[in-house]
Image (tube, rainbow, N blue to C red; front, side, top):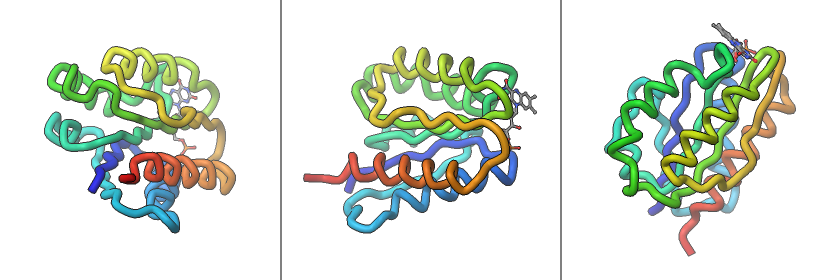
Length: 151
Ligand SMILES: Cc1cc2nc3c(=O)[nH]c(=O)nc-3n(C[C@H](O)[C@H](O)[C@H](O)COP(=O)(O)O)c2cc1C
């Protein structure tokens, strides 16, 4: 059984709906042999990260960066994960009001340091959460889970 770890910070109804869509997508028809573990960014541990085979991250853009909660996640897991998680696949969604550029850059820099492999394009969305954004997060979840399916 492969494990996909979903680490998120979802402090608004819109963000929670994106999370729900992404998690629902991981259970798409035909996906088998992938266990999905969902953890709030403030609660995730280095052991959670070490035990997973791939990662799906969700964050708002805050003050031109990823959320403080997801930053805290990386502060906690970065060093223990170095080397141990090299090459593992990840995906992410970032939602904001006006500009997600800084958050996307930060995520790229951190995951480059960890040597994680971007398995799906980062999904960036701006403005009120709508059905289309939910559908994109669903697809992202489905694609990440499918990519982890054992042969
Ligand atoms: C302190 C603070 C800083 C924020 N900074 C940004 C930002 O830099 N870029 C951006 O696009 N949105 C920014 N936002 C908006 C949040 O990303 C947005 O409220 C969150 O994604 C929830 O979106 P929703 O209300 O559409 O669900 C900020 C919000 C707060 C509270």
